[in-house]
Amino acid sequence: NPMPVDFNIACGTASTQVVATSSARTALKIVNDSASTVYISRGGAAAGSRGIRLNAGGGSFEMTPEDYHHGSVYCIASSTAIVTVETQ
Image 1 (cartoon, rainbow, N blue to C red):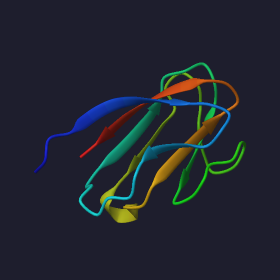
Image 2 (image 1 turned 180 degrees about the vertical axis):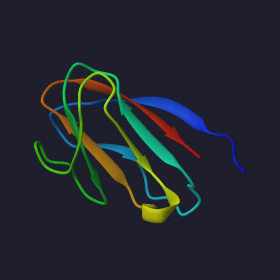
Image 3 (image 1 turned 120 degrees about the vertical axis):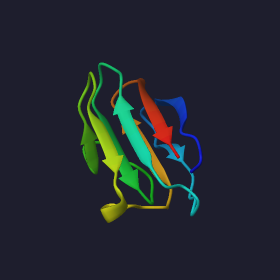
Image 4 (image 1 turned 45 degrees about the vertical axis):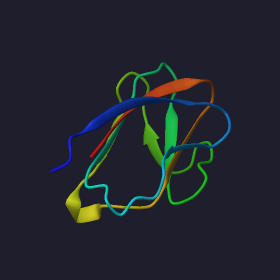
């Protein structure tokens, strides 16, 4: 098994790629560490108030083997927000 990789991404008012498409990725968790709500989108650009909502102060999303998506993931927020990403 590959070792997990942790990193931060700054999400702002424009759609930002969190991770690129990868058929080798086996796990993905995204945690919103900011004071702003973040929305994420699988496979295409993120849009405000659409997609998967990550509440401020620890809202998170984890892809499990049952619903795993190997495509790209994007984020957007109403103001600059930092999300922590763990991928494997």
